Image 1: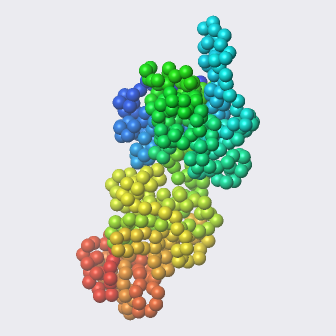
Image 2: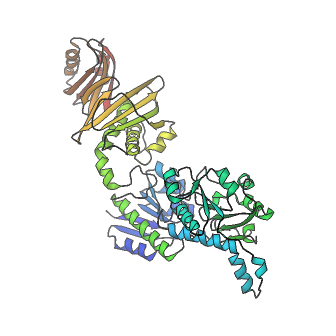
Image 3: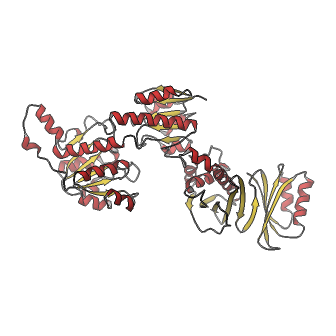
Length: 529
């Protein structure tokens, strides 16, 4: 099979060479595309490689009739509608490690230039002046820097600042105490970071929670004379609030590599304030970083299209293709559990709880849950459901999903258990694999049995009565329906029971009515697994 890839921005020669060497890849480089022109261009392509300048909108994705993978040559994916991509089953990948060092070093360059007025002094000297007294700077030594976002880049900035003798405060909701201890940073909340930082450096991802994290309210809480550095995402700062702070003197200076709208408008006040240093989104612009970004995104694209690996995919439950293959029997079983839950539910499912047990499943709750959702949703939806869009489709339909523990289940080496709730009822289903390749349903609510989940099955709730099995067999036999297997679960003699009857042919509505007319039968449903 041949895959077609569209590239919308400059890519390193090393990256292009990898594409040229791939016999199953054809590629085109088309620059300067707007969302509208990209939507016209994208049909027929399996892969798309972009940088930050091109927006991959929902409209672009709707026009992409073959698109499987969008690769972002860089870290931030705010120019890609990830939700829309996920809903269409399109994998989105980025290259989070390729420009880490370059961005950390540029942050330090901005920090030092801001402290010592390097660009302003350079421009003054170039203009023939010698104005030493106008460029009095401040030292980093014994100052405090607050870092917002302590991921790959933020952590490296912290280490380099410590080398200058700085104290480091860190705000990151996902920063563990162990990592903070190893980095020798002090975890604080935003209020404390604002109140005690001489410098603030932004390294957070752009989300609904972090957009304009630096606004007028935040600046009001900061120390007088604070200096702000941003080499992450422009929208992390409310530029109007920053400009006001710079003009008032509350903010002594700012060094910015990124802006809310790029390119920066010609009439932006940031271009004309003396206490501002600006660079045109250069953080990742080193020879080494661009080479790494190009080769990494191309190799990721090739591997993802071939189905070999999905590393750095931000909307896949499993990015390791080998692990995906190892878990495949469990995921297939989980899909069947989800499908059965939907087919047996008396009303629309509102909540899903999942529990896993066993060494082979340990640590893989996310992919198992996604597989359950896939099976649960594709039974009732006409659109394509896959491992990428299943969580989004569930949220779209208001289905709450959570991990749980302590469900009353049988003891098996590896067990997948799912409990669902609907208006007025709930049901628990547990399943396992025998010998790692023999799927079995082993529990539904209080009933325990051994059911192979395949084919067409009649699931019947009935009172346990003498002659019941023979009577049902007679009804099916009279309509030429062969029974392939019958599994019967009960909690006590003459109580309620649950039957799983696998049949070799379709069961008509007439037969279903005949079964319901039999007094011990409470309900019967036809399911396909």
